[in-house]
Amino acid sequence: MKQLPATLTELQQAIASGQVSAQQAWQMQLARRDALDARWHCMSRPFGIAQAQASASGPLAGIALAHKDNFDTWGRRPGCGVDTGHADADAAPAWAIEQLGRAGAGHLGALVMAPYACGATSANPRFERCINPLHPEAVVGGSSSGSAVAVAGGLAYGSLGTDTAGSVRIPAATCGLVGLKTTHGLIPTGGLFPLAPSLDGIGILARTAADARQLLRPLAPALSEPARPQRPRVLAWLPSDWLHPQVAKPLNALAQRLQAEPVSLQEEHTRLSHLADIVLPPACYDAALATRSAQLRRFCLTTLATDGVLMLPALPQPVPDWQSVHVGHSRFVPRELLALHRCMGFINYLGLPSVVLPIGSDERGLPVSVQLVARPFQEHMLLALAEQMQLEAGHAGCAFAPGQLLPATEN
Image (cartoon, rainbow, N blue to C red):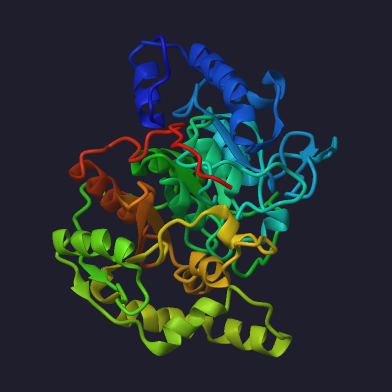
C-alpha cells in the first residue's frame, strides 16, 4: 500500500485483507502526523511511539487516533487548553482512552481545545489559531476544535471530544465531519477533566458514520445494535423565520427526500437551549435539574413520538469566518457567535443522543450540516440512518476531501 485510504473502515479492511500490516499502517499514520502537524496547528502535544502505540490486536489494531486534551493519558495530566499538560507518574489513561487502546487503537497525541472546554470556537490565546482544512478563513467550532481539524485535515482517522453545549457537534459542522454526541452517562467519564458534570458527555468526531460506529463499539459494548436497522420516522424542525436561505435549501431538500413530517418545538423546549449556555444562579440550576426528567419524558412522548428522529439544523447560518465570531476583533458580529450553539444546548440539557453530518454546501463551498436527535441510547440507530444518508448521497467516504484548502481571502 503506497498511501493510506480515506476512511478508518477502509484501513481496517486493508489490514484484514493483508494489504498492509497493522505495524506498517501505524508507521504510515505516524509519518503523516509529523508531516501535517505544523500545517493545521491542531496538536498541543504529540506523543512518541512508546507512549502512543497500543495493542497490536483488536478491531482497531493499526488505527491511529488523537484526542481532545482534557483526558488523562499514560503518565500525563491534560493541559485542558491552558498549557501542554504535565507528567504525573500516577496518571492512568481515562476510561474511554483505555477502552480504545484495548481495542487496538494508537494515540498520536493531545489536541488543542478552547480553554477548559468552554467556548464555541477555537479561540485560544495560548496556542496558534487552528486552521480549518476546508477554508483558511472559516471558523473552527469549539471547544473540541483540534479534534475536528485533526480529523478533517487527515492527521487522524478519529478523535474523542466532549460535548457540554455543542462542543463536538459545532466543530463537526464547521469542518464537514460526522459528530456524535452520546446519551448523557452512556460513556463513563473517569479520567476526564470536568466542565459541567450534569451536562458533560464524551463524543466522537469521524469522517463517516461508519467510522464513528467503529469507535463507538468499544466505548459502549452493551449498547443495543439492531441487526437490520429500519429507517425510522423522521420529523423536521426547520424554522423558516431564522434559518438562513443557504442553509434552508439543502435541509428542506433532505426533508423532502426523507419524507419528513414538519413539527414545531414547544416554547418550553426552545427555551431549554439557553440552560446549557449561561451561568445560572444556584436556585435556577437546582430547579432545572429537578425538572429535567419530566422534560425529557415529555419531549420523547411528544416531539419524538413512536421512536421518531428529530431532524433540525446543526448551524442555522452558513459557516462564518473566524473574525466574525472572535470577541474583540473589529469584524466581530455577536449574532454569528450566538448562532453557533443556537440549536445545541437543549439537547445537552435533555441528555439525548445526536449526530451531525454534512448534507450539502453553501455558496462558498463550505458544509451545511443536519442534526439528528433520538431517544436515549439510540446511537446505533442514528448512525445507521446517517450512514444510509451518506451512501444514498454517493459519498460513503468523507463529504469534504480532507486537507484541501481553498484560496485564502484577504484579512
